[in-house]
Image 1 (tube, helix red, strand yellow):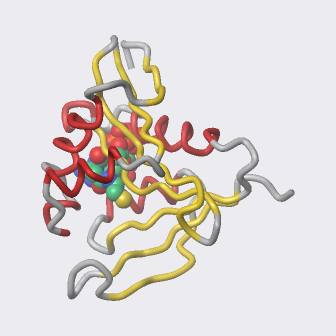
Image 2 (cartoon, helix red, strand yellow):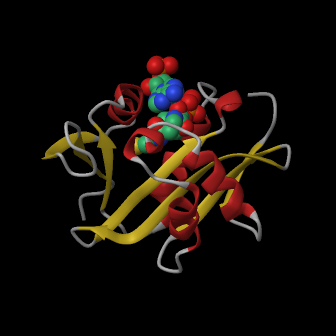
Amino acid sequence: MADVLEIARAMPGDAEWCARLMAGSEPWITLGRGYQDCLARCLHPEYDLLVARAGGVPCGFVLLHPRGLAGSPYIAAIAVDPAWRGRGVGSALVGAAERFYPDARHLFLLVSSFNRGAQRLYARLGFRQVGEIPDYVIAGASELIFHKRLRSS
Ligand SMILES: CC(C)(COP(=O)(O)OP(=O)(O)OC[C@H]1O[C@@H](n2cnc3c(N)ncnc32)[C@H](O)[C@@H]1OP(=O)(O)O)[C@@H](O)C(=O)NCCC(=O)NCCS
């Protein structure tokens, strides 16, 4: 990647950019998440929103909840601007999520059964599927529970 990538907490105005990216991308189109729903999540005070910038321009984000699943940190959403996909930004955002809560021993996320590209990425980054919730958001699709052990004690 030519530009230096910086990942930091969202700045004012970032949540709107993130919500637009999210609402305009799969899997959220298929899952029926509109802009207002995405914006409410990105602005929710219980969540931590991290934004990746290349040359100062936003190119991706990860939305985290500190105790989102089984009391452990949870990646609630992650997306990269389509022009930036396949260049390591998503992997860097997952790495930032792994480091964000220094005491965390586990990291969870849900990925849709039809989102094979994201499943491949998470498997490559050390996540393993530990469960499946059929018909969770929409009928006919499962949400797969992925887990990564960050440290043993
Ligand atoms: C998934 C996503 C965040 C990965 O970001 P990225 O910057 O492209 O990731 P990296 O460059 O680090 O890694 C590339 C890998 O991401 C996955 N990927 C690539 N394009 C993808 C897409 N359109 N949708 C889902 N996953 C994709 C693939 O596993 C790819 O590896 P491959 O080239 O060997 O197939 C990004 O593709 C994206 O925003 N997708 C749409 C939103 C989404 O699916 N989010 C995950 C919800 S659980």
